[in-house]
Image 1: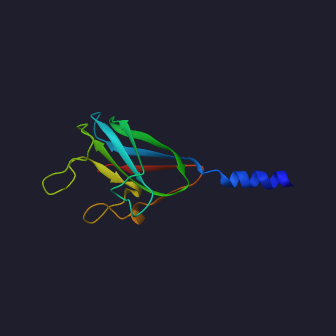
Image 2: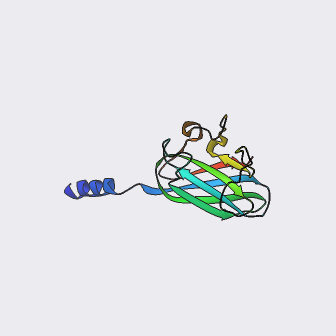
Image 3: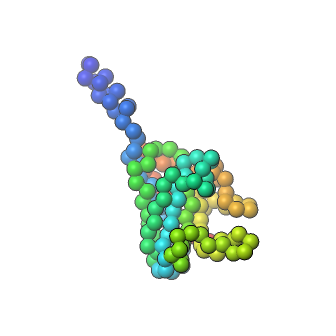
Length: 135
């Protein structure tokens, strides 16, 4: 019996870093540049201070990225097609994005990014897949 209790305590002490979040980005307009994803774990950090970022080469159609080893929990992400490869989301003179972008849940904001709650997705311990459409 004591071995069972020890095994349970040991398992409970292990961090829950097993979840992979697979993000499918649809409607990538070209092979130019890269697709960039920023992942956020709270309303306090969304959308300015990501906990993790992932980049993949762009190709026309769909790009798939994986954010590995996340603790199970709630997240939101922002994604954009950095078509010119300069590492940032380009904007026009009034601050509107000039490169295609999306947020988790395909959430929309009224005057900027949506709130964390609108973009929130749940990532269980076994992982999750989310698809967004660039606009």
